[in-house]
Length: 109
Figure 1 (tube, rainbow, N blue to C red):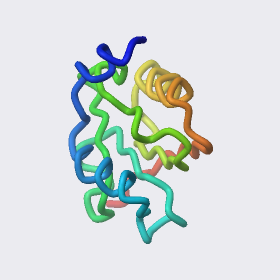
Figure 2: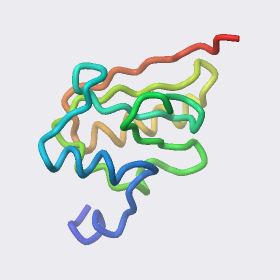
Figure 3: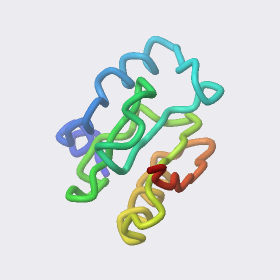
């Protein structure tokens, strides 16, 4: 992928805040400095900053290049689409990132 193609892709939801934080060499206080990526709009909102990669959009359409070398924590529900989860993990491997933890969080009623 060329630099022009990367620049043409848009940031994911809440990506600007995370990108600016990474570019200024800051990291989140939570999770030992790992960047949180939620695969569900309703998951992880209490932890800021986070990125949302919704299941209705292919993760390769988003610019994730600013995450190069970062530790990543991917959170989702156990029933989340395996196809989407695999696509997200593949997109992150392509960046590449240093560490990816994949955590399925059950619902607590």
